[in-house]
Image (cartoon, rainbow, N blue to C red; front, top):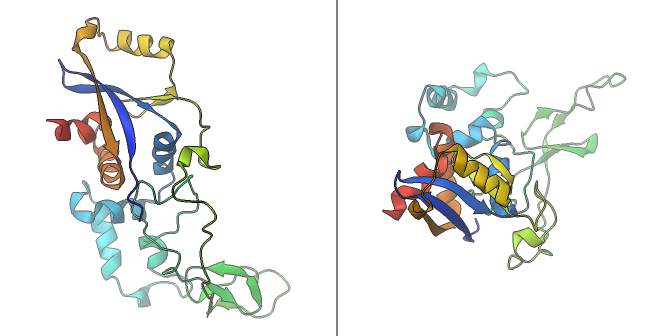
Length: 238
């Protein structure tokens, strides 16, 4: 898990104690967009069941307790409780805890088709199930982990690396409800008019650090509040 943090500039309405918007770069916007790709099971595990509102955490807990003998032979509980995140941002461990370190993650392959892998042991090989194959193969043999690609230095800013969702060298405006748009004088003035701020004297700039703990707070706030930036950051500033 990375301990890296980024700086985020907030424009705050001190009169109403609300974040107006955040001035953000590629890293922060990539993080926000990556939240849309998180499976529900991963969200519950990151936030812990005790902080979840509603009954989805009860469903999650009941599956944890359910004996695997009730599941189909080719299904495993971990495929639902600990789903694989199939999309990657520039630096996937930068702002959320790494739920699966590569060296601890186990992958399995079918002896008949070693080019196909799964993180579920004894999962039915989809290639063996294709027409023309008389027997069903299973992902039964473990892939041996050798090492990670360390060619990309952790000292290199994420915004200078390839990948992610949005382009770098652009400043983005993220409003309190996490709407993202390219930042410009027109967009800023339009937002201030929309929320009826006429006295610019009430506006204050604050620079905050944003890392793993703040990422979890913002993930939680995005599920519970229409004012996610305010909910995630302002309590720590007072």
